Image (cartoon, rainbow, N blue to C red; front, side):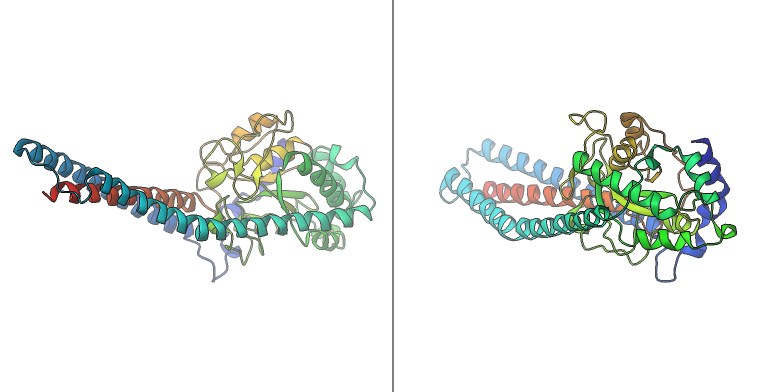
Length: 368
């Protein structure tokens, strides 16, 4: 752990800025923009809630006035007509939701799950034909780094050993969402480098949280509406680590919207604790906690605002580093703002439905 911390500290300035890794096409202010959008949506929700309160007050006033005048609300069909109207509206909305929205989402999720499983099967076939040194995952980070730097171990051999271990772990724990294509090619390229060109992370296999942007892969945060959000380039922090010799090989599961201390979402399912499969591995970076805790990854990349790294580390018996907020670049990753906006949108829809129902009641009560 001390060796890893020293390596990261040596890259501090490069990781903090990440300016040279952000292409002109990427939005370096994405986090700030999403935070602003989230704030606007929150304001909208507050306004809608105020409207609901006002409508409820109007209902009470109308009902009180009707009771004082001894008048009966003139509702066609009486109370039964009002209930029938609301029932028809509810069933209509439910039919459209079930037959179109949920069906479409379910198909996208099933297709995404099939794609992930296909990648795991392809990797399994490749590993069956490879020679695996199962003793490599037993090395600590310091020993592994030194042997790779000296050339005692090849990057491809280390990668294959961890791929095999991770494939075995995810079959039991469901911790890996995808095995990254091109990892073998990157490892072979590293093995051809001159010793003087080796970076501090030379040949180190790296697992990354699903929320970390990886070129060619979606970055959903466990939310189905982001299934088509395929990244055109790696996140800035990942680019820095790749430049220093790291080999990203697996993407790991997380809690939905990164807002839970467990690790489950509708796309990739639930991840178990490597010490006890009947218990949770923690969240939101639970896939990393489970994979590293099972000895199937030596170092992983996640994110932490309210314990998302610290909680899985505690649950799975491993160590983690939680940097100071805003010290490392989040450009290119799924960010907290996306989750906030998604959840707030759901709240807005629910509140609007309540407003419509209340307005129907008010209209019926006022028609005296």
